[in-house]
Length: 408
Image (cartoon, rainbow, N blue to C red; front, top):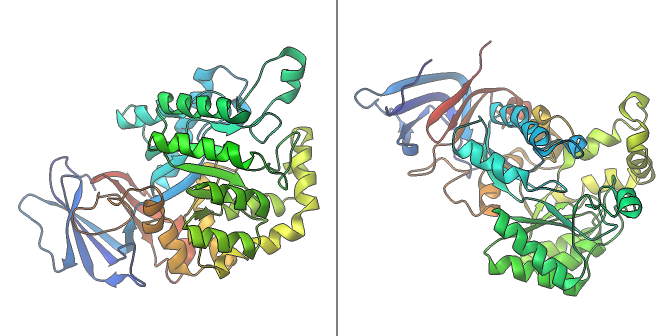
């Protein structure tokens, strides 16, 4: 149906889940006014002149939040910056149409292009979710964010936001703040696609981390870190990082430290299975990602075991996918990946709503309640019974406006 700007909008789904409770409520309606939730309850009458949207067969939930995406195509890193920026446009559309009304983009290697994308979405120039941006991935030389070390050795040209030592890190964080950062992202350890390092390595020293996180805190900026193993996680948790990304090789020692410190985990589990399940598919790999394939093969057993570990802990889990490392349209598959590895339906759904909003320090998001921002998604079916319902969005509402309606 067509809705009209400025009018109240009354939503009538089969059931409503508020982002917090253990179960949805059958037969409730939700009234939207001026971009906010005005009321929720049974038998709500439409206000005079209101639009009414029937959502038969649907569950209405808070708009989903993906706390770990990469909008810009990393394969276009060596292309002109204008071209690489434009690669974000189809990614934004796919994420929004999946019901993700807010995302945290955790940066690219070189230029702070996602800050301009964030502004373009705010100004209505392009369609997409609300963006919280970490402009770039801070990395030591030889670390996960050092994207073209051969160029550095041959021509003295760095590709990556590289900083070593406390003075360089302090300057790098300040430059991120000047570029318009909402978050600071840094490598706490190596990765599967890295050149010199690997997923078992550690990036920064304790003193470097203290400087990095304290400088970010001076600007009121929280920090997220890429880290896989205990050593790197224990070090960043001790320094005060807000969220750890991945952690797939972590053990109970690291999770206990995270729980005690109140550190959030963003486990990005689907992307790990995406690569692990394709190890024997030669068509998926080429010479450019041979190192990644080799490292996944070497660590496949510990990785699969590690995927099962966080669900058995009380660590605060926020939903994040690493979309961009796989097609953005598949980011909803993180939900069934979490369930497959032991998370309950309600914990997985909270991870993408109320818990994600807590991580992002956005109390107006992630819930359906009076005066909350009217970011909502209606999915076909009941995700508490069938988690794949999260992959069947039928209506997406952002700040009270219907931005997507499924056309069968």
